[in-house]
Length: 462
Ligand code: C2O
Ligand code: CU
Ligand code: CU
Image 1 (cartoon, helix red, strand yellow):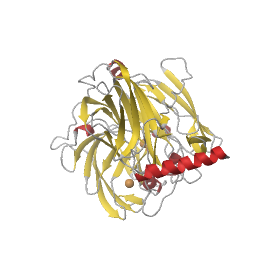
Image 2 (cartoon, helix red, strand yellow; image 1 turned 60 degrees about the vertical axis):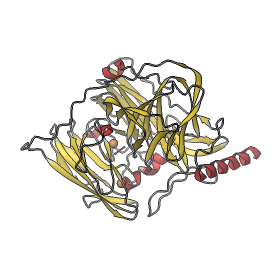
Image 3 (tube, rainbow, N blue to C red; image 1 turned 180 degrees about the vertical axis):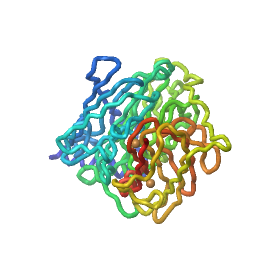
Image 4 (cartoon, helix red, strand yellow; image 1 turned 90 degrees about the vertical axis):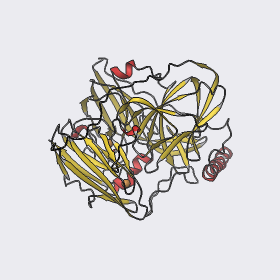
């Protein structure tokens, strides 16, 4: 009882500190960063992989001595990393051990519509669903999460999400940090609120979703990581429901970006900050060779995301290669080339929004797309009433290239493959898109509350 009381007082203090000013924590406190397990492949053949994922309720201590009710895959909060290889034949049995229906969507994975895990692939409680597909895309950091029509946001908030890595010949041969959990680190970043009892508190209002007072990384509050090698590769996912992050190093050292949503950039990009809206990913390499024995952090705004405790002696790491992958230029259509164009107009209304003036309808197909054909989609953010803001526009079943942002060439970090693109109020983004698999897919705003409230549409590829 005393222990519980003390823990609650600690929790209130932690919340107070987190909400007052961040970075107030003194080194020495906090929790070691949790590293999600790599999911075991049950198929011994190198050409095939078989996985089992079970969604179930659990109990997680985000703060020592304070249990919280959570949801997770094969664990109490979040899920394991699925490491797939290009060309591999994959089978994943997804079991629903929750007491409500769910789906599991493979965000960024290019698979047939009926294997995609969108709102049409509902798994009832006690049932399972076994998608099968061949991995048909280059090395990348992707993720998975529920996608129930109208019921996605809270399922993710309570813990249902995980990462997918794809490896290929290119990632095998690049001299980048690649030892999982040692110098190749997943960072699933989420903002969360807690109530006085220490349980997760999910709430929305007409004005939107309040920003979380606590930042969790891989489900760890106040996380720190021991740095033992000169270079560290971070695979960062913004898995928040609605918050944007702008990551920066506390000592202003650069983040060297090597990958965006869909895989490697052509060449590394040295950046002073990195913006990620919900659903977006980036891989960065950090150089700690001049920070031996020091404590630094990855921050967003004035908040500490992850503290790095750098060892005095660091094992050496190779320099980041000058060339990473060959993507080819993003070629705008030739004058006179007859390329289908589609327009997507986003408008917000409080905690919801519309695409082309419509709310999501499971029984309505919004677009028909021809298999294998290049198209240009224009995504325009028309703003709106109350809380008009940027929308992360996401398309299932493909990886696209950004052609232009408000009439200009996109910034270099947007020249790689993307599946989610942030479109700010008043902006217009053109993407070059092509579908190589058939079926029904979703396009939507990745602010999960907007998605749930109907800011989503569906298209069929044939
Ligand atoms: Cu990350 Cu439609 O999803
Ligand atoms: Cu998706
Ligand atoms: Cu939105």
